[in-house]
Image 1: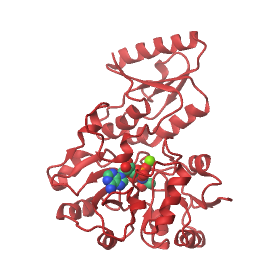
Image 2: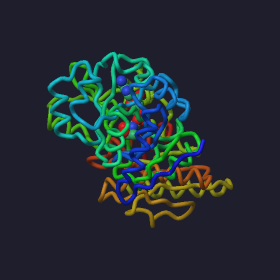
Image 3: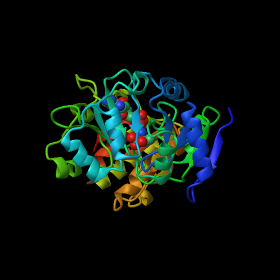
Amino acid sequence: MNTIMADMKNGIDREMIARAGEILRAGGLVAFPTETVYGLGANALDEDAASKIYRAKGRPSDNPLIVHIARMEDLYEIAAQVPEQAVQLAQAFWPGPLTMIFPKKPCVPKATTGGLETVAVRMPDHTAALELIRAGGGFIAAPSANTSGRPSPTTAAHVAEDLGGKIDMIIDGGSVGIGVESTIVDMSVPVPMILRPGYINQEMLRGVIGEVVSDPALFTADAKEPPKAPGMKYRHYAPKAQMLIVEGAQDSVILCINRLVQEELQKGGLPAVIASEETKSSYEGGIVCSVGSREEEISISRHLYAVLRELDERKVTKIFSEAFDTPALGQAIMNRLIKAAGHQVLSV
Ligand code: TXA
Ligand code: MG
């Protein structure tokens, strides 16, 4: 299949949006930018179209998709019950990096919800995404546009790397702003529950609706209960090399990583360090990547997946990462980092 590249880095191309809309209405696949990561879109109400997403990504079919909408009133077309708290959250954070889960209406096929009776819904804060959703019929299922198991794409080039030749079109909107996937909150339970941390953190949610809890499975590798978002159980976001997170006081972390890097070099390996702007000059060997500045948290989330992909490409043999427990985005960043490391964390 020839994948069309539609360049919208400098603004909306109406003709291409119309064409992308036709592709979606005909059951095809279009990748598009959002404020979080790139998504792989298909008509969410068309069972066959939604199934194509699973094939293109190599995604397990029990892992449900998020339905993207562009108008608040469309929520009521697919959600059977919308509690008042969800309306308040939508008013506060939509369009934006927040996904909410509701009991589904019959029009949403099981292929979209991975067999569940609930549906995940979000309204992205990105002009090209919103235009595309409208052009495609209003209800676009879109997981992250990566091959299953790889880090989510934050540029159109990442999408082309994974899905070029397998999908109809890629809309290039440049690099994304946030870089980690949306916060997922289950609104179908008595007390709203965070199933995946993201830019909209617990404090921000509590500021709007009061009590919000987190899925306990988020904080442990061996919870007796599996995570409530099916996708969170997979080894996601993973680079090919083995990865270790080193946490503790800054000086101890640097000392420890420098030692581990030397050991790996002596073994003939190619070690890499994921550092920050503030610490990068303290590392003495291997490939040193600064992921961003601790003074500007979003620079870290924005570049995290690109750094993981780059280290794959450079065929490093070990990755040693600092921990990034920053105040607002720390939970979201560490959730991805810990999964990328297969829960290998060393405290020094
Ligand atoms: O930021 C985002 O949310 C991006 C962009 C493209 O919008 N999308 C995204 O989709 O991250 P995906 O498919 O990579 O992740 C969706 C997550 C999975 O962990 C899935 O299991 C969970 O949402 N999910 C979807 N529907 C659900 C449901 N009904 N109940 C529980 N979890 C659900
Ligand atoms: Mg994903």
